[in-house]
Image 1 (cartoon, rainbow, N blue to C red):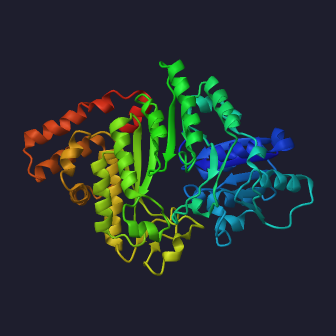
Image 2: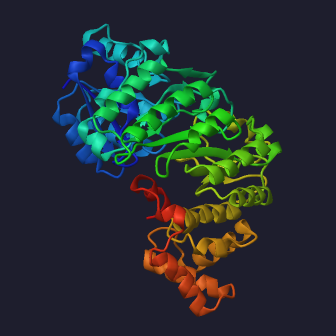
Image 3: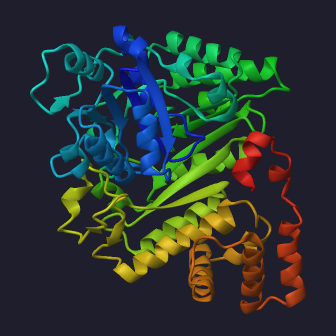
Amino acid sequence: MTIILSTLNARYAHASLGLRYLMANMGPLQQQTRIQEFVIGAKTTEIVEKLLAGQPRVIGFGVYIWNVEETTRVVAMLKRVAPQVAIVLGGPEVSHESAEQQIVQLADYLVTGWGDVTFPKLCGDILFGPKPLMKLHAGVQPPMAEIAMPYSLYSDHDIAHRTLYVEASRGCPFKCEFCLSALDKTAWPFALDTFLSELEALHARGARLFKFVDRTFNLNIKTSLKIMQFFLDKLEANPDDPVYAHFELVPDHLPDALKEGIAKFPPGALQFEIGIQSFNPEVQALVSRRQDNAKAAENIRWLCEHSHAHLHVDLIAGLPGEDVASFARGFNQLVALKPHEIQFGILKRLRGTPIIRHTEGYGLVFDPYPPYTILATKDIDFGTMLRLVRFARYWDLVANSGRFVNTIETMLGEAPFENFMAFSDWIYSKTDATHRIALDRLAALVTQWLQVRGMGKDAAQALVGSDYAGERPKQVAAAPQRQARHLAA
């Protein structure tokens, strides 16, 4: 095989949409091209051995924040044992601030930005001449109608066992400075009829779980309604074989027409990822985030009370200008809205994002190694930031896991952030660990904590036992399998 398209996915269940876009747009070179995916954590020697088994002349790597360190080792070994193979890099991690990166220095060529047109052309030049003289090739953004759709390249195995990523549009009109989409000028939609026909073909092949990567699913309400109607039609026609769709939702833009569509979905069919990030208007203005907080809160409350959608809502700690007290107020406000999951994220400095402009003024200190997590700010010192990191991990284990749905309300009480931070500090003092805590031990520690806070031993054991025995609130117990896995272990 002449050309190999490769990446290291974070998990096996993740099927790379980017590689499949490249494959779909290889044109005459497609017959000589193969996709070969790996998972982070695999041995470098084994990855290199498998890549070279096909005797490729070109290997293209998709490089992301989660795989750059391991991909660097793979590229370094390839250049040692097979220097004749041309290495081409692409992806968000190497599209910005590339000159300083070891992996770019090791590679032969780099495509920044959109690769649909530029990567195939570069491969043709490498193979047939004239050989490119420049390492850096800025990706050309073609008209959306000229981009070949990648969805037929999902294999039957992918459909049966992996998450299928799809996109009705690229880009984002918002300018949130912590996000790479801040560099986009707008959002560019694919032709809706073409996209829906691709979804139809996937569904006909057995696909039932669709994860949309669009940053702004509900930006164009007419398009949103047509996409939702596609899934509603499938649910009506096949109630015993339901679809499951995941969308990223702009929280303060939920007109009545969209609410009517959302309300039609049964349990277990719909998930929304909603980025609040901060409820502090001054912080929002500082990072160029436009958001009507009152409207966003009203919409989250409506979704919780009047729809069956599973809500995964994001907050980010460590944003410039936000101290712990401000973050705590936002966290408590979000808990009161009762979304199914609160993703407690820690700010990361993605290469190329404008957030870096606040470094000096707000004392931003980032880890120099991926994933470039914030270590301290003017308002949150290093030790306190580590406490927040541990809070986030324990929150996933106890609250987001769905294993303690009856217990968590008692643990949070009237001051959710403050009470869970106290638990986080306590459990860390007992375990000196945030990972590899067995469920039995975690349940025992939660039971012990309830007693520390004044609950009787029998009552604490009964409360945790109600979770441990599998007793779930109705919304969790009744959820079909595809949604239940987001609500319980």
